[in-house]
Amino acid sequence: HEFKSSATNCDYMVAYADLPDAFLSLGADAVLNEMRDDLLSDLELEFLASLEADVRLAEHPGRQYRLSGDEGTLDMRLYLVNERIYFLAAVDSNTAAVDRFLNSFELR
Image (tube, rainbow, N blue to C red; front, side, top):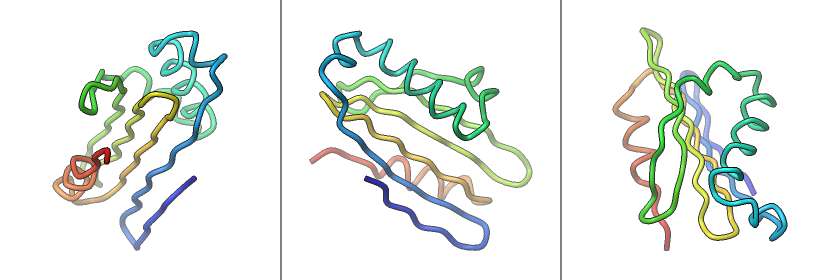
C-alpha cells in the first residue's frame, strides 16, 4: 500500500507491506538489512547505505537514510512493526517540512 503527495519541489510518501512469517523469522536486523538493500537497489541509491542510522518508532526498530544539501533534504526511513514494514520518504527544499512530516508518523 502506498500513499503519495507531490508538488513542484517536494515529494512525500508512506508505504507499507505485510511480510511473511518465514522472512520475519530471520530477525529484525536481517529483515531491515534485506529491505534496505532491495529498496536502495530499486531506487538506484545504494550509496545511501553508508548514511544509515538506527532509529526507533516507539519500541520498534528502524533505519534512517538522510542526505541534506543546498537543494534540500532527502530522508527515508524503514520501520519494522510486528509483521509490517513501513517505508517513509520525504524530499523537499524545506528541511523543516521534511522533519515535520517524518516526525508526525505514529502508530495507532
